[in-house]
Image (cartoon, rainbow, N blue to C red; front, side, top):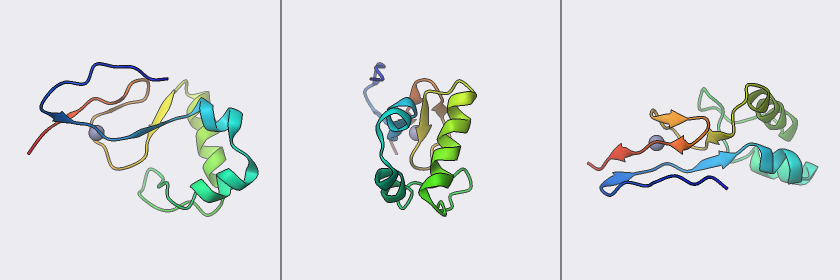
Length: 86
Ligand SMILES: [Zn+2]
């Protein structure tokens, strides 16, 4: 679990843990989830294997979470650091 203090008046993006999927997801789940997750260029993954390769890469870099939607204030250990509400 990722715990952090959420500040009032800020919005946060969702983040996805890296180790959970690598430990738990089945082949079918990788295939399913590659259809809604986007890569760093906001493009769809071609296959579940492609998605898994990215997760392995991130884990190798020591990262713990990845953004699931566009976030420009992201910490790879804590997730989204928050944005001022507009
Ligand atoms: Zn964010």
